[in-house]
Length: 189
Image: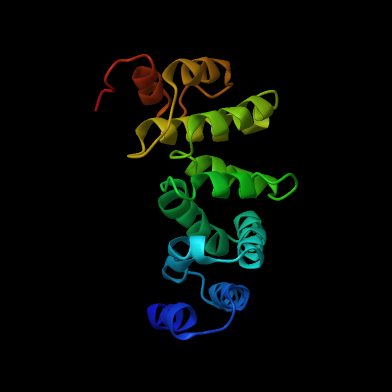
């Protein structure tokens, strides 16, 4: 059913882009699932400024929502659609990092999914968050995914320096694997 509804909104509808975005997002809030999200990415370059602005306002709100059922499919779409595409990653990152746009929970989700984001963009965020140990685990997760994701983006020397400054429990899951990879050793299986 989500596929048919999505198709009707994006391919059978002749309403302005902003209205299609509104309808799709209203439907998503009633039936949160990833299958209602792909057209936001595949049609992104066709959307006018008003539709794109609405999209990013709503995506920041959904990523910040305390309800994982609403937030997680959008976070997944960020990772596998917007962040993995060279055509949309910069727009997505810039719009998500809009000051005051994400709650702390939203920023946690984005950090975890940020593996494919160009490292220079992520590292600026890391540097801003590093003084507060509350963010160390999420910076670690971002480094982990940046290092091991298929399209992950990492600068090994800088990632190693940042990892060395993080205050993490010694038994943090995958910490040893990340250290080995950043030090140039193949991780043990």
